[in-house]
Image 1 (tube, rainbow, N blue to C red):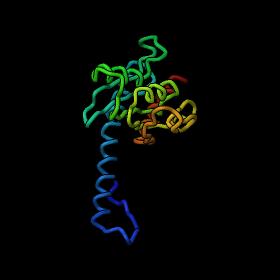
Image 2 (tube, helix red, strand yellow; image 1 turned 30 degrees about the horizontal axis):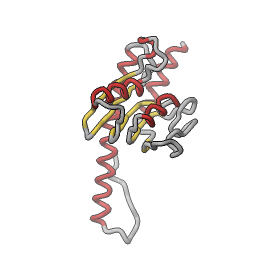
Image 3 (cartoon, helix red, strand yellow; image 1 turned 90 degrees about the horizontal axis):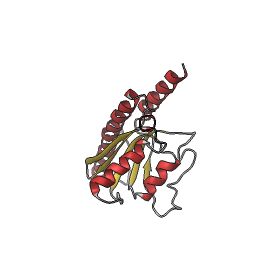
Length: 176
């Protein structure tokens, strides 16, 4: 899938470009691997008749927290997958600073979750589907634009079709 990456700069040695291409492919494969774990959590939420959003937090290649939406189950308005994953990760690391952690989440975080991400110092957020109605990492708002005390790196659209289809099916089933 990524083997066809090309770079047409005659000044760049082929060997250097090959190593850059390998790094890009590795990073994309790694992002997809962890996004699939987040999708598994979203499917767990769906089985509980919750909005299918899942999140995992990774530190140094190890998943340290997993969560899915549980707003209906817990009757808790803040029981979003991201918030629950942040709480689990903080407990595991015995501290609120989740530096050098990466969050993978199936839907672009809302303002509440984006605020929690900034406040917990998560290094990077990788999300699947964009959320034009409530997305706070670029779609509707951008809480990671650099005006706050911490700015996580943002990568959107990883396995976006799979994540979007899951959400669309869930909501179309609710409407019918």
